[in-house]
Each structure stands twice: as structure tokens, then as C-alpha cells.
Length: 77
Image 1 (cartoon, helix red, strand yellow):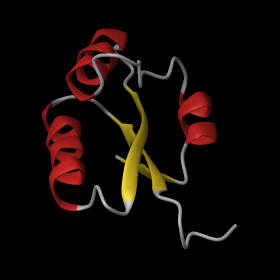
Image 2: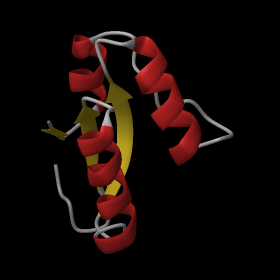
Image 3: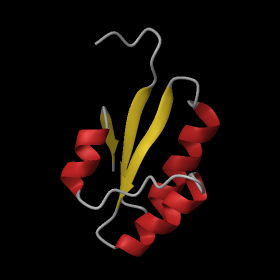
Image 4: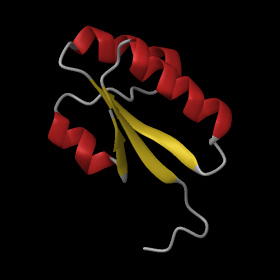
């Protein structure tokens, strides 16, 4: 797949303070080349909370790890 005109889809595994910091860093520093495709945490409330912070209109929360993997080109833990 050619990446010339498309953004890399990043999945965030773990939605605590580190995952939240990673998400903010992605948005601030590399949004031109990457997009957050999903978030997952073993604690669904943490994933839901981060998803709402990142995308109030559309949920980024994935219910399972395989769902996050399928939606992403790269997973950041």
C-alpha cells in the first residue's frame, strides 16, 4: 500500500496517563502524517474517557485488542 497520500493509522494500547500523553503528542507533533485510529485499555472506562477527549463526535474506543490491531497500522503501548 502506498503511503504517499495517506496517514499512518496509530492505535493506542493503554489509556492511562502515559497513553493520554502519547495521544496528545501525536496530535501536537505528527498529526500531518499520522491519525489515531483507536484506543484500547483493559479498563473500558479509561478507553472511553480517552476516546471522548480525542474525538467527542466519534468513538475511537475499541472493545478488544484484536479490534484495535485490525484498525491500526502501528500500535503504541
